[in-house]
Image (cartoon, rainbow, N blue to C red; front, side, top):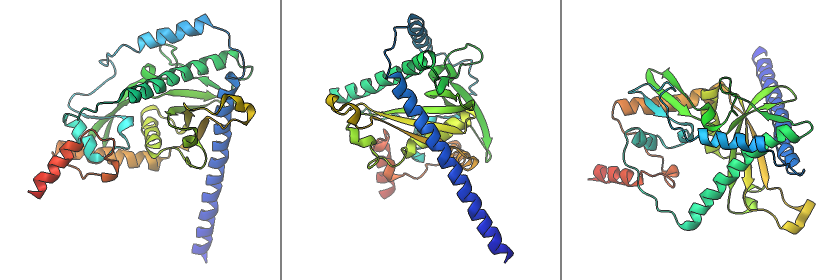
Length: 308
């Protein structure tokens, strides 16, 4: 009888936790979308101070010196963008295997260019919003030492781990750290663009944030000590200009609360790969992740050698 009561109590507790997370997620996702809509609903002045600030930030971003970040020589390095990748791909990258060259078509290069341009515009929006909205829901956190916006190279850092008997380090930067004004909490921002059709970010095709983007947030959690994240998608394709208020939404937002279980799972993966790298043991390949892998020719060579 006691066991049954315990199981019922545990189930009720899980449901309560999930309900709280859902409420929090809805609050934050609605708030960030309304925040972006609000800044695009007013006629922005041309603020020379903000524009200078952004140009200075871009200029500072050209500095590629990482000597003061605290890298440890001889220690295997991983990055947040690689968190979701195949373990064999991580192995090849650590071993500095030459990646295959991918020649892009001109339209694909413009595709990437447009995404980068919108990303910079989003950062501009955030700075204008905190200065020109009457009651901005979000402000950009500033760095403690330089008072720069907490994003990109302004917050890049390295963190070492000794986990499961393996030494490795995590290096990276993120799209931004926001402060949610109603309660003062710090929220990690991951901003992504979609370039094909407006339907790609619609509720029918996009039920949740992409798995690789969520895994990036887990890595950011390890680096920056954040638990809550907003993953925001903007479609570069827009509805008809004449649709007005009836236009389909061009932005979606998803909430993620990173748990200790998430962090430990990713640390387990990095430790496993690090151990195999130190021991020169090739990890298994994950065929479902081959499409964008730049090391496919090497994988094929390994298979041919095994077959022979």
